[in-house]
Length: 393
Image (cartoon, rainbow, N blue to C red):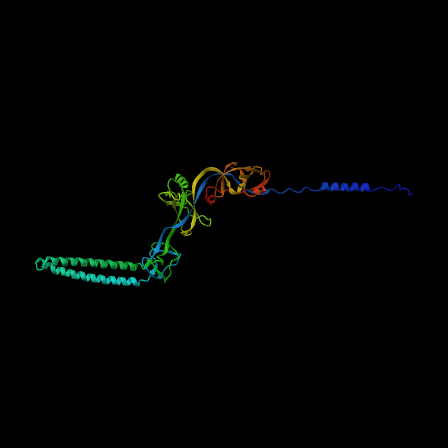
């Protein structure tokens, strides 16, 4: 049996202890992850303002004056003297129809006038010859009466012939068609060489429209009519400048707003019982000719103005299951999720009936990333005056 070495030392417990110490030290030295930086959030300040509430109607544009170009005589179209879609001036030649038939009718009528004039001269001569003889009882009274009747008939024949000549000249003049007004002319319904003026061939060759100002025809229902009348008092708005805030706004098909504001100029005398609507026409200055006749457009008018109400941008409100909330940025730059009661929408803004006070700040971006108790870095967003064009768009 071997003897135990008295100098031998066991290292196993010591090594284990050292390993545990190292692990403990390593755990103590592990660093806490750095906190995320505060978010920069654009904010808007709750402000009091007069907010217009708009009523919007769909309408169709039309020229302030629109005149169809008709041919009053039939014949072959032999000339067009304008560029389709261009401006024309009053009296400018537009079309020419072959005049040969109507020229021959004028010549024929002139011959009949000459014939009637000759007959009148003969009847006058006969009357002048018989009248003295009748005074001397050289001819009978019957002969005098016959000569007088012949003279009157000859005068009537001459007048009829002259009228036919005048009519023939008028019809000849109809072979030349001129612009009745200054305006924009459309695409021609007939081309040179076509026979026109008799169905089924074209009778209405074109249309000339005055588009400055441009008119818009639209309809409103009975309730809208009553609200408008109570606010405006009258539909003519003759005393209202076109560019005042009380004027009408024209929204074009692409969503853009017409530069000029307008006003109602006329309306029907009664509400249509079949549709329950009243037709109105509004006029808008159109100096650059941007708006053409026949376009569909929207008319926007101020129905009411809410005085000194709290407003914030629409995008500052988030909706969930019918509840409306905003992120309020408090004075210490911490967030608070708050429920609000929204009011009417006016353009990019919304009225807040309950839940916010003037001067408070609300976040307008990053709403889904924010919750109550977070610290943020607010960046000020410009708050446009609500009752202006930016609100109205």
